[in-house]
Image (cartoon, rainbow, N blue to C red; front, side):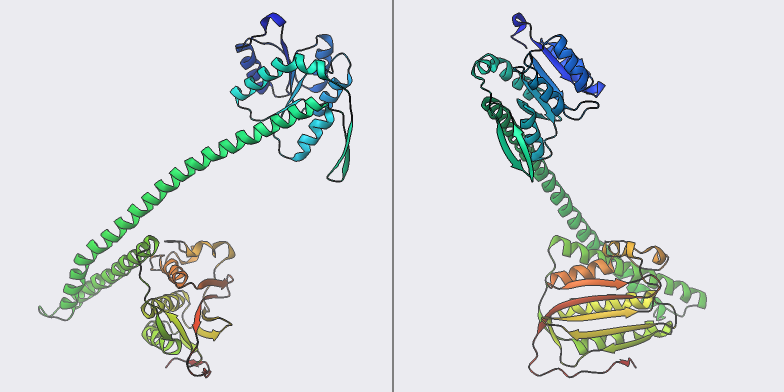
Length: 434
């Protein structure tokens, strides 16, 4: 509440936004101040010359005459030059401070302003204006900032007040940032807690689902093998569908379990020396029947004796996933090539196909859990394979990537740290898998 009623305090507002001007006027009048308002610097200057205010609060960005020009006009008028001017600005650049000094402004206040801080600043100005008026001595300071020369006519007290108010704003912003960081820390802890509960739930559910599912698979196999008596063709067809659906569900459960373990940090990587030529042949031999069904040619090019330091089971999972995906999404009669070659400190494995390719817009999304590229959504799959493969490679401190162009096939690759073999590697030429 104002303590200056007996001194007939008038505060002049220069603000082009009617809403903001009305809000500021209401705030000041609620605290006992007389208020005059103008929509731009030119009209505010005319108002000040008609009836000199005790304090001026001006926006910077206004039509016809902005806040800096308005302030210069006030300070150039002998009848008005002692009136303190408080500029409302975003303080987005040091140039705001320089122009404020150049125009003769007394104080800055950042927009959007805090009401309590604004009232405190007004109280400070009014409390000190009599002392400042007796101490004013004209002076001029030339400075060069950002390659431009500026003439500062502000008095020492004005400069001090302006810098103090700017510093106070910086402190207040810093306090707001500290509070925001505290809130973010609380939110991050909640997110981590929710994520941990999710991973634990998925892991538990996956284990619980495996037990009855294994029973379904086991009994369907027994029925298919006619252990409990012969089946008709129709019965055998249905049993086969039950078994295949069960296998698909088991793969999904295994993928979800793997993903939850990886994200929860529970997956153990047991490192060993892995000969890549043998691993590539094992994987392609395993998947050859699937490729033969579609008439797809599999080929491999891998130097004999190349060894990486990796988890053999997980490395086979990665390569099986990539080659299996390539076969699944390559049209009948296509080709899938696996190439392994030595780099400086790593070994790069590539799986290249003649499939439909992946549009550039989807290449980052395709590694997200459960995501499936638009043209591939009608194919069977979980949408987890690539996400798991990428995370497993990263767990080995390796790199995983994709090179693809729509209509021209895809190349998924990963690089793992090399383990130097005891004997030099001999290159094996590319041959189709027999």
